[in-house]
Length: 257
Image 1 (cartoon, rainbow, N blue to C red):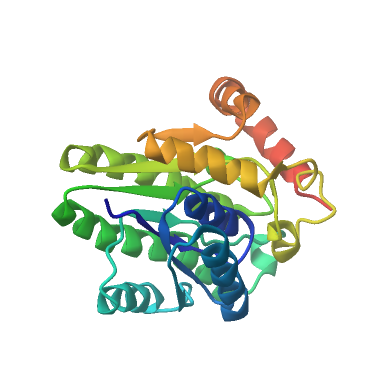
Image 2: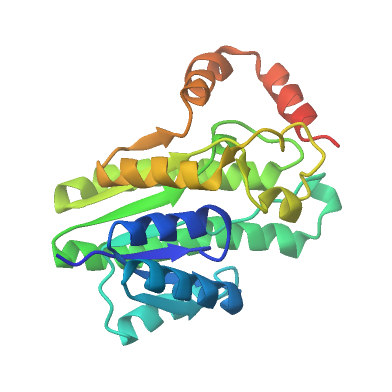
């Protein structure tokens, strides 16, 4: 049975751990990111350890045409994608008006537009193939507004909503879509986004544990999965009933240096 997974943002963090876990189960891979050196090293590691095939496609999904070029490269290589894991994304700490607008719009392009384009393209193929699985990496950030990461939180709100709707649309056609909703994870995300030194960027889960939770939930066709029970409780039973201004102040304080 074909079992090839395409993983975006596979050069580091959760993306790398998704690749390692999938390979450990005997599946082939298409891994993509901007950093070819890191992808090549991961390819060598996984092929040597598990005897599977890893295809490396370098792509910048945050630029116009990036998602299409990735899809076209996969099709040209004749690779059937059975699992799509949309993991690529980034955030940035600080006041929205202090950031360069092109970078904020680039965040939307990567976190939202490329995810939608890849989901749309590969979901069509999956339907034609008779089934498939999609895992979109959302965030607990998508469950509330995020002062000092206003655009990032909003992009993850889109991912959380979009993923659930897509699952309902496609489940009857043999394609499921799971959204992984982790809290803070110990990856390079904090350094890249400028969150290092904030209260939010402390005591996070490991990338490997989060990847396993999300991947296992995807295989079972679950709709929404949190990596910790306490996050599930807080998001569903505390935050919705707290005064909105209080939630905003708390989130802002967690992201203040």
